[in-house]
Image (cartoon, rainbow, N blue to C red; front, side, top):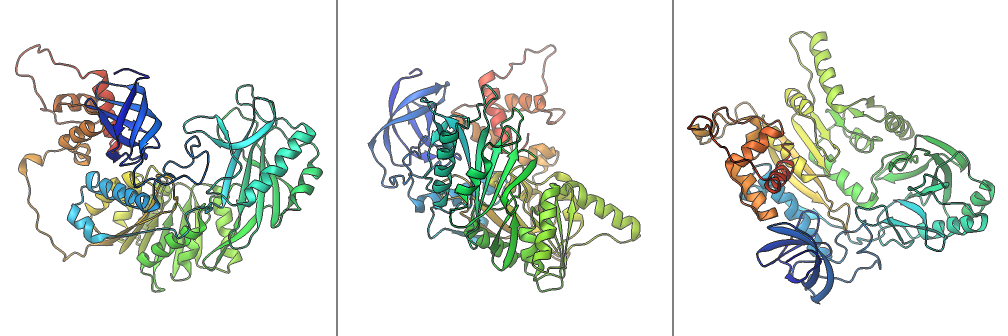
Length: 554
């Protein structure tokens, strides 16, 4: 086999990125848009010794789990990875993904996970759920402006104004904008030349209030004929805020820092439960308000508040979870690195008349340890304490310093909200190895038709008189902390499954050293002088590094 050859595959499994997995002549292939049970014809796009990638060309026999995509450009667009998979199968895939990461990375027993994992929270209507959309603006071959989404892993715009996940009002907004650009010859921004004016159109919708926000991201300081543009948009029902964001940098970062009001208010409002929020163009706000209420309801339920607790909400954003918890807690402290988000959090507290929520600007991994040290200094012989700690970190998970401080603060309960089950599993392994027990785990389908999923976990502090019986293998007692994250056998199994390669302990130890991970001093000690030690081939080195990243060791 070679690149561009056509092959027939029966899809037997699905990868973490939603790719179908099948085998031909002993080689494992990953194929985007293929579903378990499909028999397909595919063209090889990349080929290694034991694995490769292929493009779906024709479905010879469709899987019973396949559904026709609601969006006509679902395969080209990078937004939905699994829209052609039956929704029930999507839910099973996401639960299995979380369970496998907890088992393989976290080291939790399969039977134990069967007891603590609760059923996934699905959506009754898994379409048109997004309250936010960012449409790149470009130019087609005829020179006319177009709006759509980027194709997967590219900056090629796939024209599409009728997104199956977005609100219907988005199409009307884009029609007004593109008509305006054509009529007044407003140029779209070009990444290649750095010229042109309009880069993106950001649209946000208040699901409960019906308020609409439009923000134009521009490569300049003004939009010609602004009054005409805002006048046309104001005719759309619910239009509340029209702003301009200035981004003149040659970058793929969408938003600049400066916002200018063109018409209306600088924000829109919406509700999660009974809490009212002000949302500005730069505010972080969950994109699925229906499932956000479910997610935060679970976090609040797991927190088990009675009205007497002190709660720390880390990575609090604009205070969405903090304000949810404040109604049932004695005091809530929120921490967020983005100053604008903390300003929004304080405003949102004022709007709702909440006086028992206090917010700090800074990195959670710095603010909490600093608070802990300061408390010890000011209260000799005592240490800072929290009844409940809630964390909702970015995909990279929690910093080690933060985890250590959380353990020292001896919170009765920790509620971990995660958007990445791999780093969640890594952090849970640490917390459960330092005095906490995992009580409940529940996934929430926040992003239907994509491979992403949110997870909420309840951890409970083990009491001093709690005890368990364990068996110790004395041969393992000198293992390094890095080795405890994943055993050599786990790394071998991963490399074999994902890449079809067999690797030795020697090769793994070589790559660990290359990546700065300590291994045992006497590991694979040569038995002769000036030995010729085989070096790990490049292909296997890449595979081992991929495994180390998967297990969050690098």
